Image (cartoon, rainbow over all chains, first blue to last red; front, side):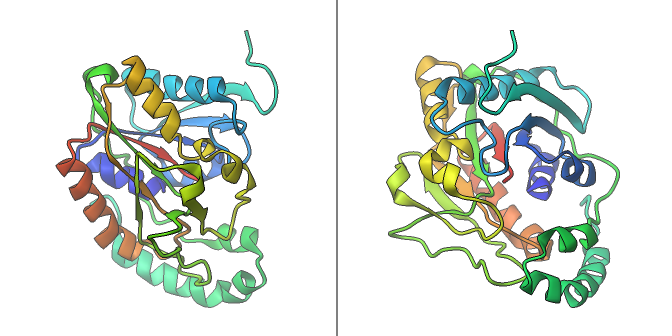
Length: 86
Length: 175
């Protein structure tokens, strides 16, 4: 998937990804990524947690505008089945 | 192209020969450890400009989603994986989808596909004006080890289609 992201970005379309595998990101070096502490198979948070899913997407939109270095990975603070940090 | 296809093919053929017994025994951690990540140190970059509220977005997931009534499942048996993609319309409903990917637990996405393919959330953000537009067609991939056909054929086709659709930003969820 990181290869798809790299190839699309190289073709001139900005990309952002949401993943949970820091070691995989280290190998593949996506152009822009958010790292979540959620289990594989549920990258945007718990099933049915609409508010959290929205928040992760809004974080991604914000990251598009603020990440300026190729290969930036930003870790999000949210934890599985726990309230968001204040 | 920031990917050395010839170097990959050589290392990959060796990896397949070595990893087939572990793959058949479902020792996925072992085969990943040995997998030839042939990737250059440079990172491709297209500067982002503009505002999400004026732009068109498309989604990509690698969760193995396919439309159960009209599309074939991905190949989940081969060590090479399946380099093809399925087009998923924005009008898709949870009950239209099945998952063909042998290496993760689908149960959370079966409850709510938005956990790996946040199509409903993007439709809501479009209605709220947070994003300009969610394009009509989105893309699902599955498990791929032989990335040569992915890089040389499938991704160029994906790029052609999202360009034609006027997509400004691609949002990816690797599974």
